[in-house]
Length: 116
Length: 115
View (cartoon, rainbow over the protein chains, first blue to last red):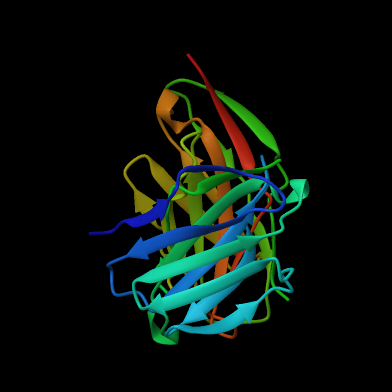
């Protein structure tokens, strides 16, 4: 199984709503990532979890709250978002060992988020 | 910090022809890996090919090959016998040993394939 599964595929939410994005992988990867991607732009790193601990937060606003309940799951909780937060949100996973640098990041299909 | 540059925002190729996408990077590290990812309209980022910095031999995967010039810090992707399904955004990415949980992406090249 070399898949990263993200749900939902599409999400429309109001600025006062609370919603969550979910990500799951069963490749035994211990590094998991959230990226935000605008159209025709590269993915922008938001958060990295390493061994279920938050290791990188790229100064993301607190209205985005990540959670890693176990080594296979990654959530992104959303609250009080703004229209400019509308984007494709990608989850990824990879090996988390410096000596295994040859392993790539595996990406999910993303959640297309629209904030209205 | 590492930077990855793709200087071609958009390129076009005729079906069955060959096209080369450019990527340059800047790093002071000696141990790192380079990747080319493809992102079709279906949105999922798919690995096309990877190159280890310590290997002099250029990586190849079927119709895809790279020209890795370590001294010049250049990592171009050659697609031979282009197919309609190759149309996508292509991103070059870097992963180093110092901050190994960060992948640095270039700005991307949109490849159009003409029938």
